[in-house]
Length: 228
Image (cartoon, rainbow, N blue to C red; front, side, top):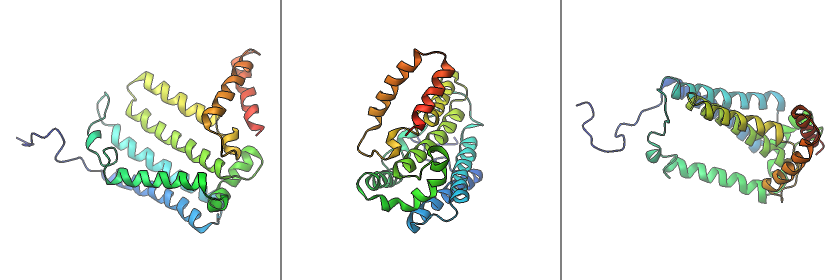
């Protein structure tokens, strides 16, 4: 008998492979670059550093999820979710909760200059998209959009045998960078909630829909957000 244990939990949890460890190292290095810029309060070489940081994290996600899901059979793969430290209120789960809570505390309640390094780092991207320097809300929106795209890749790999899940994931990945990132929420209105602006955007979208084709609608919607 290969596994004599009668436990419903896996007594010998699967360990990360060599490729996954390399992927975690790449993603970790990308995150460390962002933290260094934040701690230094000075963005050195913002374009190459930001590109390298996001590129390393994206490469880490790609390698990790490819190794995790590509060779597994079809079907939903939620094996061991209740027993993993990250999703079962273990040490990693608590650490992640503290990090996220701390970031949002700084974002909402601390002065703008607390994020000077990151706003400088994202300013070239903001100048390209909005023709003005980045503020903390643009940084937040950009990181949120990057997270949606990265996790979208994960879910496409995970549910690659389910056409509905693929279309659903791609639609979320598409709508995030196209319709949301230039709204007023990321232009400095920290007291407003995203749902309020989504409601206003939906109302305007309905008005625009009466004017013509879907392509015209997308064009008008993009131009609407670029005004802010």
